[in-house]
Length: 315
Image (cartoon, rainbow, N blue to C red; front, side, top):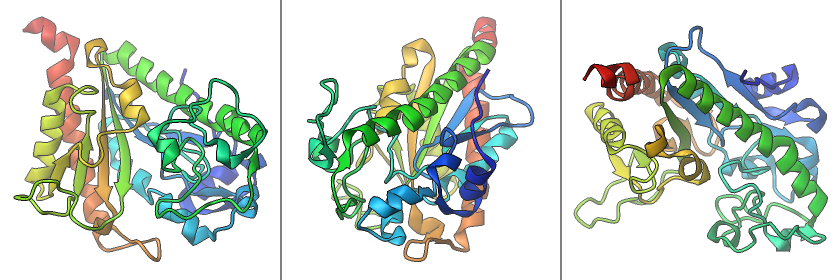
């Protein structure tokens, strides 16, 4: 059975955004379940959490608006229409600046901590070097988060208390989809700041509305990536693949097409739906949410038509 862990305080925080005591966080995630489980799709929103622990705020040298620059604001709400096609939505409640579940469990920067990290910690990854490990050293624009080093025990506690339950829940959702439908498709949902052209092609100098990441074809069947790309373009969006975002740990770790588990990451340009200074939704939010509901339904239809064991047996 999939565990749906939350407290009433944490639920209110996810819906409204606020400071929260760690004691009220529960396991730091919740699962929005459809009325009827009819889809092998699973939607994950690991960076849209907006419950900021008071203890974390007190340890930071940054203001709450500065910390929120790393947040994938409202991404969970944008994909809420996935429930209408019978798919669940897993979402973190804690913010990415506090703990990033789209990393290995122990990508940790020794410069951040008081005490010795365990020998199994990955201290040399590129993400750690950039200050964006499992426990981030900086927010997205390079500002240092903490006023002082934090105890190693504090960092390890976050992994045990919040990281592992999130991934346990994700594994259970994937296993449930496999057991019921014979395959699983994980769509990992993110947002990206607007800015200069994301394209590396001189002939295509554009600001992408979406970037699809499938680890250069390793995490997802090509037909699924092509369909997602096509459907977004049909709705008038500008789409890039794998550059600059090919997919993080979740896409890489869970995507295994040979085992009938597919994973694809989707990045949305925040300019489409929010004011990036005030952290408020704009008039584009509702239209984008409607389009993403359409995309979820079309991906559900294609995936089940393409990968359903019954359909394949009939062929």
